[in-house]
Image 1 (cartoon, rainbow, N blue to C red):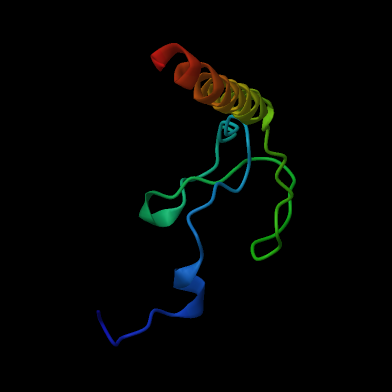
Image 2: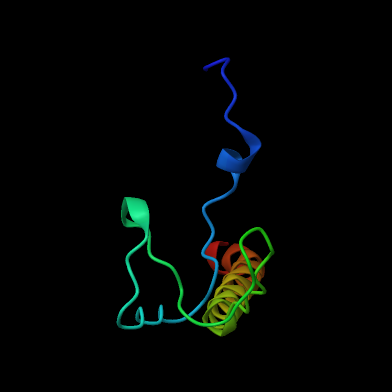
Length: 89
């Protein structure tokens, strides 16, 4: 492990700043240096947090499905633990 620490601004997590398509740059504006793209239109200045609305509906559905499957497997195991000793005798 390296003993050199990165500057605090370089240690930010890699999280998307906005959800949705990036707006096209208006005609007549120059590209920013270094190949970076900016989001066109009014918005917060650099350094201000951008409110992000994440959509967790698919994740909720998947978690419900996992819960139902896990619960059904546990119920099946409990039923089998009572039935198998009677059948094996």
